[in-house]
Image (cartoon, rainbow, N blue to C red; front, side, top):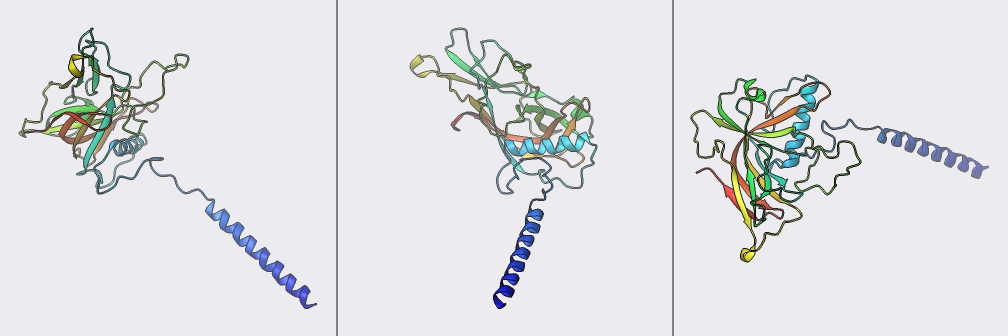
Length: 272
């Protein structure tokens, strides 16, 4: 009789334990509220902001703009330093004489004989753009740089190749994330380009043809995040509810450099 009672108690205890585990599993299985930007990295407070950080910030700003959210006080990005590496020339240099979008770096052959490769970056003039003139900013000029392929968080060339059988495969998406290099009225003009392109020529060894790296090149932008008059780092604008908003971050650019894919500096520019 004692054994029967003991077995009954053990059975009850096990049933209770299993029930408790079931409740615990149900609680643990409850999905947590997703972050504002799914999969976006959290910027380290001790490291300069990188490409992924700016893209995450732009995505959050675009989402808030699209639903009409009013930003709260303070912006954690304002005042942060940044070092952004932007890949270009991923498919090799373009034909000699080719032109690209202002604000995007490009690689072109210097001549039809392909004796040298020219790396260029012409900052876009955003001074009179709606994103800038729609604010109360007192900036004398704004030089723009695009962060293209905003879906790519890594600072390297994509490995996906175009499929001509897919609709739209041959058409590039217009850039939607940009870095607005601001220049205050009366400030030093030493780091202004005023329409002049950053330029570097790549030549081959011993007079031979230059080698085209499969990973392309990088343009690195460094400086500090500024703010629009409303205190926010980003400002967005969109043509309609079904189009991705264009968002730009206000910044002061202190250094521009052309680099190889593994970080070797080819040319750099600093104010002064």
